[in-house]
Amino acid sequence: MDVMLSWFGQASVVVSVLAVCWTMIWQNLQHIHLQQFFARNFNRRARRLAAVVDPYLSVTFEEYEGGRIKSSEAFDEIKSYLTTASTRDVRHLRAESGGGGRRDAAATDKDKLVFSMAKGEEVADAFRGATVWWSAAAVPPPSDTTVPWSRAARAERRFFRLEFHEGHRDLVLNDYLPYVRREGRAVMAKNRQRRLYTNILKEGFDDGYYQDVWTHVPFEHPKTFDKLAMDPAKKKEIIDDLDMFKKSKDYYARVGKPWKRGYLLYGPPGTGKSTMVAAMANHLEYDVYDFELTSVKTNTDLRKLLIETKSKSIMVFEDIDCSLDLTGKRKSKEEEEGRKDGDGDGDDAAAAAKKKQEEDAAKSSKVTLSGLLNFIDGIWSACGEERLIVFTTNHVGKLDPALIRTGRMDKKVEMSYCDYESFKFLARMHLRDDDVVEAHEAQCRRVRALLEEVNMVPVDVGEHLTPRSPGEFEDAGPCLDRLVTALEKAKEEEGARLPPTGATGTT
Ligand SMILES: Nc1ncnc2c1ncn2[C@@H]1O[C@H](COP(=O)(O)OP(=O)(O)OP(=O)(O)O)[C@@H](O)[C@H]1O
Ligand SMILES: [Mg+2]
Image (cartoon, rainbow, N blue to C red; front, side, top):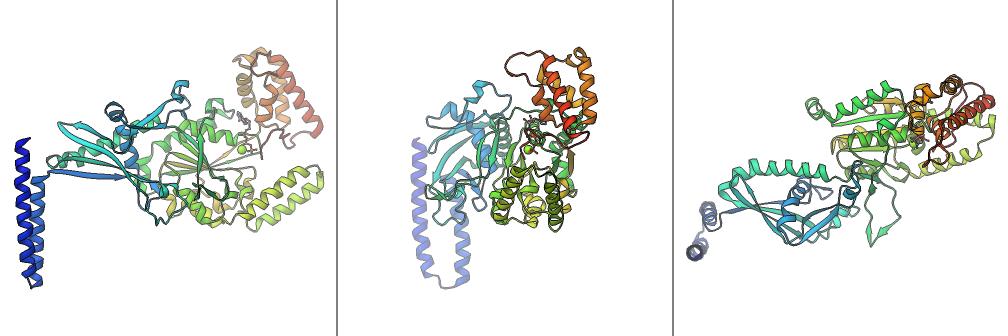
């Protein structure tokens, strides 16, 4: 300690003497070239001297980079990496909820908290014989932010500082920091709380500031592919496609394409389109961003939403044909046809009123088709990676071909009426009996014959098969009878191959 102090004292004297000499010489130098020569020389020597006095280097990792719109991945990874060390060695911690969004999370996991260092704390870490020090700090936000709509821009500027000996420069920069990021990513994956985001906001200001563009809740939808009734081959094809997408980072980099994929899910109401989105999110373990386009006023706002989405996510646009006027000239023709149909049966005033409401909402939005096309594959679409864009619609024919061409919507999946395979699946699931079809052969044969003549969507089939009090056991016989009766009634009322009953469709 004494040796260090005397070293420090001597060094301070040398610095002071040098500084005084330098000032005197500088003031007497008249020639500009000489000034520059001395400036360069002095800087080099001063740096060497500083390295002797304080041989420690530091690297700062700020929470927000690049215009303070998006939080820095490096910062998040470091924060996660330091979780373990900080809970052990630090006295003041910062707590965030975590783990609750994982479908497989046990009840206790949902109560779990993830800790990180509070500002002002410092923790030491060791790597291949070198010791480094991490500290957490924060400064107030700048008052002249250019992005007032972002909470990030209004929050204090948090950062981590890493300090290490100059002798470990290469080790730290080339090996330690990549290691920290890798480990941090692994911790993040473990603690990740999956989220469902929406862009429906309260009007105006919150505490005197604009609100964030996204609000979220934990994503806890219970639907998985093994609870989704559809043709097994088609289901397998989708699962394989998703798995392939997840593993294809290198492929997308090699061919120079942003790592994203478009899905179009189309079919009548109640065939499982929204349910499929939940199953996809659960399969891939992604977050879901539910875009409500009628709440987006302009193309610029749409871009803001895009910028604030994270990787490993599904961006969903439900009922895209209702959200925007994307149909161009073809719409008026189809509208006319729709009006004729409406005149024909005259029974659906509520549906017409709902449609008008949706159209009015769509009109208040100024998002254009070209804005949406740019969103999907414009230059900004490459920010972030590993993302699915999913459109759902009941009327695929109403969509502009540009919107659904390959490259924008890479995979088109038709969700259709219930066939016999799907019925068997739903029966086993709802009646909790793997042998139900064999045990009630006659009724199932009748169902099969009726499904070949009548269109019924899976949601209605499932509804008829659901025991009257779902928590309790009900014999399969009465449930199957109810379904047979409903199918016969539908056949009687509407004849073969008429539109679905749509009892619980959401569109
Ligand atoms: N193929 C299916 N397999 C299992 N359940 C299904 C299926 N289709 C629909 N369901 C059930 O029916 C309900 C409604 O389905 P969902 O909301 O996914 O339909 P949708 O196609 O999105 O309808 P809409 O076009 O009206 O939005 C859900 O609770 C879902 O569990
Ligand atoms: Mg839906």
